[in-house]
Figure: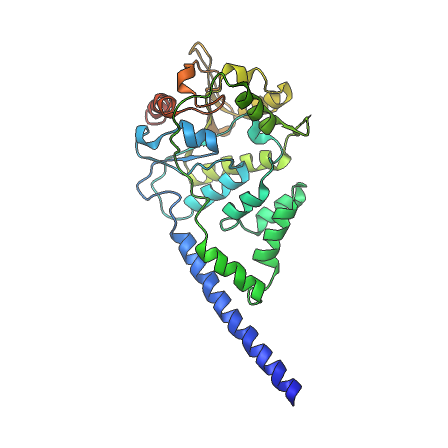
Length: 317
C-alpha cells in the first residue's frame, strides 16, 4: 500500500510538472511568433552576418529593416527568411550578404549558434546537419533537448524556465562601429585565420552551406521576392590572402545568377543566368581606409557611403 501511494504521488508530481512545462513551452512559442524579424511595412529585408550588420544601415536604404546577426551562417539566414515570409508581408527585396568564407565549414562556436537559433529551426535542420556530417555535440544536445526529451520531465521543465528568460538573440540588426583598425596586422591575421583556416589547415567547402544557399534562392523564387546577393567591400590586404580555392567555389555559385559585378574601377560587367538572384560583387570596390572598421567590416562612415549605393540599385527597379 505504501509503495502504491509513493508511485501515485510520484506520478502526480510528474504530471503537474508536465502541465507546467507544456504551459511554459506554449508561452515561449507565442512570444517567439510575436518577435519581428521583419516589421510589417518593410519592403527590403537585410539578412546575413556581421558584414551585413555593419555595412548596410537601414537608415539609408528606403523602406528597409535589418535582421543581420554576427557570425550568422547561411542555414540560419534561411530559417529567418522562412519565418519572415510565412506571414502576410510587403516584402519586395531580400538583401543577403555572402562573402567568400560563407561557404566554408562551420566556424567554432556552434553552442552559441544553437543558443541563438534553436527557437526558429525545425526537425529538418537537424536531419540536414546529420546528413551533411555537421552534427556536432552542441547540435546533438539541442536536438535532444528540443525534440528527443519528453517535455514533461524535470530537465525539460528547467529548459523551458531558462527559455522564458532568454533574449531573442537571433533577431539582429544594424551595428554602428566607429574608428578604424586598418594598419594593425594582428586584426588582419586574426580575420584570415578565423575565416579560412582551422589548426593551420584550410577550411573545407561546406556542402550543407551551399545547399542552404540554394534553398534561400528557391524560397525567394516561390514567394516572388527579388534576392540580392552582395559581397560587401573588403580591404585589398584581406582580399590578397583569400585562398584561391575558396574564391573559385564562390565564383561558380555567383555565375548561376544575374550578375552585376562591380570592378574596382567602377566598370560594370553584366550577364544573366538561370537562377533568380542578382549578384553584386563589391569586394574590390575602392573604399578609403578611413571607411573600414577593420579589414572586412565597414565603420559608420563606410556604411553610410555603401548603403546609399545599394539603395540606388535596389530601389530603382
